[in-house]
Length: 419
Image 1 (cartoon, rainbow, N blue to C red):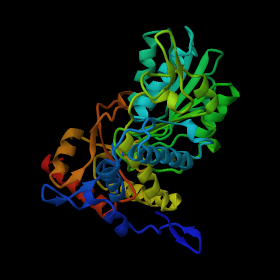
Image 2 (spheres, rainbow, N blue to C red):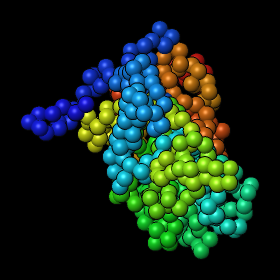
Image 3 (cartoon, rainbow, N blue to C red):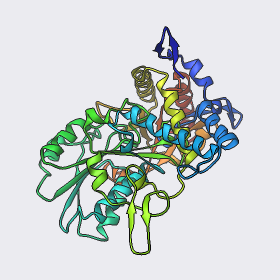
Image 4 (cartoon, one colour):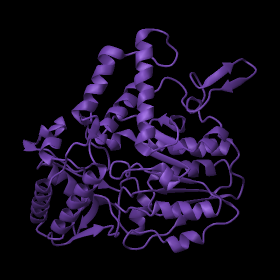
C-alpha cells in the first residue's frame, strides 16, 4: 500500500535490501547455495503480499462471483472487479470494460485471432504483419487461422543486432493488410521495439495494432492511450502476480464488434434453444468461472508495484543490464546474442564449444537459475544460426553480487570443459 502523508500519497523509496525481503523465495537454498534467480523473463517471483492475497481469498472469501446474492459471493465479486479496475488504471485504459481477463498473453492473442476470424475480419488473401522476433504465441495462433482461410503472414526483418527494419516495415502495407501484431520487448533478445512508431505507421494505413507486452509490462510503465495501440496483452505471472491470469486490453470499438471466442456461463444475457444473446463488455469474452484468486492476486501485484516510482525500478534494472553486459564480456569465448541500442534487462549468450544446456545444468549446482533453449522463439534462433542460447534475465530484486556469482560460475564451466 502507498504511504500517505498529509493526505498525499508518497511513493516508497527503492531499497534493494528491503525489496528482497518482500520476496520469500529469495531466502531459500538450492543445492546448499543461496538461490540466484535469473529467469525472470520466463516467470517472476511473487512478493509476500501477493501470496497473502491468494491465501486470504481461499481461507476467508472463497465463492463464485457475479451470480451469487450472498455475502461471500458479493465480497469475492467486489475484489475481482476491483482488480480489473486496478489493471485499467495500471495501463491507463479508458474504461475497465476494455480489460478482459484471460489465462495469459497466449490466450489473449488466440482470442483476437479466433474472434477476428469468426467476425469475418479476414478474407482469403489478407495479410497480417508480425516480426522476426516473435514469441511462438504470436506466430502459431495466426498459423492455426491459416488452416481455415488463406491468410498470409508477412514478417518484419531484423538486423544482426536484433533490431527491426522499420523502413522495410513501412513498405509492407497494402490493401490486404488487416492487422499488425508485434512484440513490445523480445523475450530472447531483450530488444525494446519502437512500438509507438510502429503503431503510427499502421494507423496511417488504417490498420489496427496488437502489442504483445508480456515482457514490457514488468519493466516499463505502460500507457495504452499514449501508445494508441488497439490491443495489448500481458501475463500476470511475468509481472509478479500468479500464474493462470492475464489481460487482453482492447479498444471498445473493436471489442464491441468482435464475436465471443468461447461460449458458456456468465457471458450471456439470455439463452434459449433457438438463440443466445451475449452480455456487455467485458463479460462477453469471459465464459465460465474465471481464475478468481488469480485476478485478485494480479491486483495485489499491481498494488505492490504502484508503491514505487516505476522509473526508479526501470533505471535500476538498466544498471543491472549494463553491469552484467560488462562482466559477461570478461568471459572469454562468450558472445551476447542481441545487442540492440534499446534493451530491457535480458541477456542471451553462447560460449564457444559448450552447449547452453550444459551451461544451465552446471551453474544450477551453484544455485543459479537461468533459462536455456530456444525460448519459444525458434525463428530467432534460425536467424542467428543457433539451436539454443543461455539467457539471464533480471528483475529489480536482483543484485550486482548475483551477477558476479553468475560470472564466476560460468568461468567454472569453462574450466570444466578445459576451454
